[in-house]
Length: 457
Length: 102
Image (cartoon, rainbow over the protein chains, first blue to last red):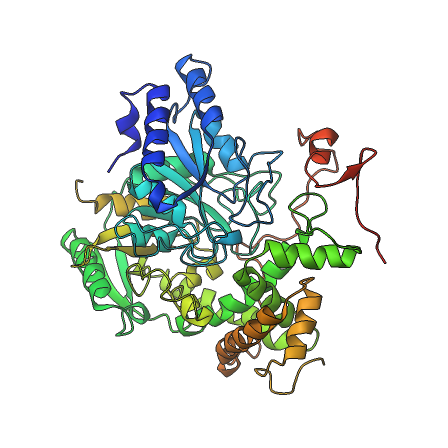
């Protein structure tokens, strides 16, 4: 697959034109909602003219369409924001542009990033890069697909409970969910403020590390950002790898387990120590997640009222009617489910039993992680219990769809970094990712470990 | 309390009340399908009640931050009033127009 360094011999214009051409050739995947063609070509000329320089000079990339970026609407894959032209750019996009990178388009997602398959997009689902009858994964499905198809060498996503890692696994690329607070979320459509993170898809661990290095750091416009701790590194020691028992049960597809075991064997033969570890709170993590996250969603999505921006409902007489109809028409059903679950768990009389209870359980989960990280450098397991499922397979049953997140939500709740790296393909030709989880701020170590096990390394 | 005693029973009235709390004007068909969905989701998450959390402090913020202050100075967003006024569907006399409140 194409790496960032492969672009060194191309002019920026050539690189951007090639990316745009590939994007148009692959329209059947529905991975992109818009192209920022005019702006990209102008920026390419500026790079070739020497006006813009940097570590990513002339490198084309794609952002998930919940990043505010110039050159096309920011829709969040909803009709509510169908024509919303962002008046600012996300800090992450600004930082990449300052290094010369060129955004060529905006990727499909589940509307407002609510989902695990990109089937909740108001503009139709993105298709899997290896089998168009299957889902791209989600919610950052489009970003994973454009990376897997070599349209661009990297693409940005957001990960609140697995939305980068799971599509990375389903499409055979690297996906990074960093430590909570690594990258500013300013200018990115908010979902669940206590777990939302910004990360990237790439084809190698090194490229992912470069992109994360550029994006990381404090931002006075996002008070949750941490001082920049991200320093790309190489692995100079042998690690202790904990295989999480709860991730390797019979509930997990046999092909997935076999490929993950293969990855673990490779780590063992490289001299790393493998131990089996317990993380019993995993059993409760999905229940915690589907209380805490909807609660935060119901609060964050209250801003979409159709007044200051967004598509307003027509033919209404009062303000309350405008809110109600705008939101009914502008949100997809999954948005409504989550908002209403959030309203329920935050209701007087239910707050203690649901929201508060879940936040206490979260403490117990974090304690278990902390105990394991006293002896393990990295925890390992699958990203998802299955490879990419069929389009439509899980759409009728929301709880079944949520169960696909069972292995990714725990690191999100604990705020620890977790990455998905390719572990191979099943006999049926579907990619499977392995999930590497570390303690907070060990992001660069996880990527260095992943690099040490990459095929051609 | 607005809801039935058994927490996992969601009535049609409950759905309509939640929709009202959420500023969502649902049609009948969606009200029906959401009634079933919400009940199933709540039944799933209710397994947390089996977990003993006595004496455990809740975690709302995972990196230990609290009360991050900034200087009380105006930050230039780089966005003009004209640009912001260009975003809403309806404006009048350099202001955003809204329907009557009542």
